[in-house]
Length: 123
Image 1 (tube, rainbow, N blue to C red):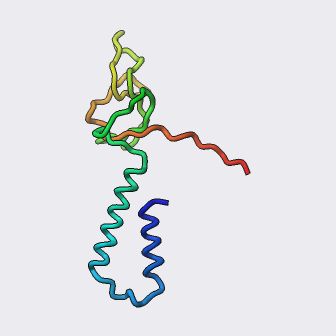
Image 2 (image 1 turned 30 degrees about the horizontal axis):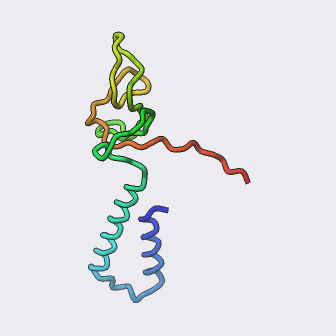
C-alpha cells in the first residue's frame, strides 16, 4: 500500500466515529496536509522512476522513459544503437526501438528499468 493510502487510513481510523473531533483545528488540517505531501514525495521516490538529472542507466538496454512533452511513457533503448543511417552508426544515447531515431538529451526527464514479467502463483 502506498504511504498516502496508509496515512489516509490512519486518519479515517483516528477521526471517524468520534464526535469530539467535530471542531478540528486549522493547525491539525495543515499538519495532515504536510504529512500527506511528505508521503507523496516518498511514494514518488519509491515508484522506480529515476530523473535523468540524477543519473543515466549504467547498462545498455531497454527502459521505460517519461518524455518532457508529448508521449508520457514509452519504451526506448539506451546505449549504442546498432542501426545505421546511410551506412553510419546513429550514436549513443536514448533511441527508438522501432525506427532509426535518437531522442534529444533534454526530451526525456526520467527513466526506469523494465519490470519483471508477471508470474502466476500456483496454489
